[in-house]
Length: 83
Image (cartoon, rainbow, N blue to C red; front, side):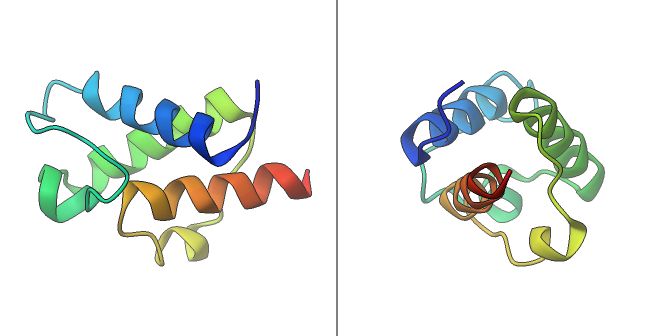
């Protein structure tokens, strides 16, 4: 799988849109918790899905800095580049 930002962002958006709790459009600037109303458990489950698809693990300390879809894509792209 390609690990460029656009591809990772698309994967994140597709995964979020597939979640029945997500009823709003999702774009790169979408704030994951506030805009989508996901609780911490839903966010962790969602992040684990992305980790599985990208075969990388996002450290919890990095997750604390993530607010938007683009922030999350950037973190995953950095981790993939390092692996």
